[in-house]
Image (cartoon, rainbow, N blue to C red; front, side, top):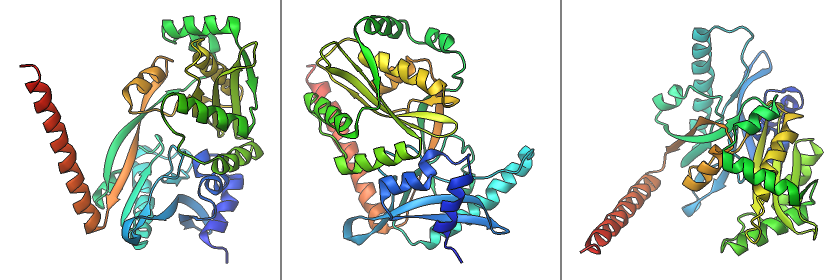
Length: 335
């Protein structure tokens, strides 16, 4: 009899409603063969699943965290057709409780996953001691009319795009090596360093292309200087702006043009465009200016280890003390 992982791989080949982040090939790309999956089955058919990967923390503590470059994960569930709302809530309680019981049996010190924005009911997790932080992304949920989408852009964005269209060209399928090098050097110019290795990115890039779920776009000038690049990930429903790379030496508006071209490309493939929102203020403002809707999603956590509970409490005290000291110093400097 097949284990859960093998059964889940079979499901991934046929189930169109699975987000790209929950697909087996994506998990292979970002976790290797280390990931596992919890499933809820009825009559030999998987009705719900939660993929996860266990990593080792300090003192060998077992932790479940989000894989690198993965926006969401969490519970996927298959809903019966024409299900009433009341029945849906009861159905979710049943399958979520089953998943939670399996999670608790894993005996991990800490759990953290970002759930899809489609998961709007986390009560069963709350009842079992899990905590929730609301995060946000920006989504253009209707890609059928590009002219309307462009009109919804901030006026400065529209002007920037029109300007960039006069001097830049747009290309597709930048190689994994060229994309990685552009991102690495662009970050270095900002005094930052890239947080993923090339071999990791190449595997993710190759598997995304092999599964018709990845695309790179870039814009360049007449001297073949690349001003900006973006790596897109797609499933049946959404296109996600996974990685953006902008060279600060150029002020041509290339990044704005590239987002518009990415949206136009996405309109031929999927229903929605997800900017993969950020809680960083200036990044959030940038995404908002492209006319997307603010969409909340849940970040679910639970700390089981007493050591981690104490450590987290101390870190909060230290952080709060530092903020208080800064406020006092700032206040005193006025006098």
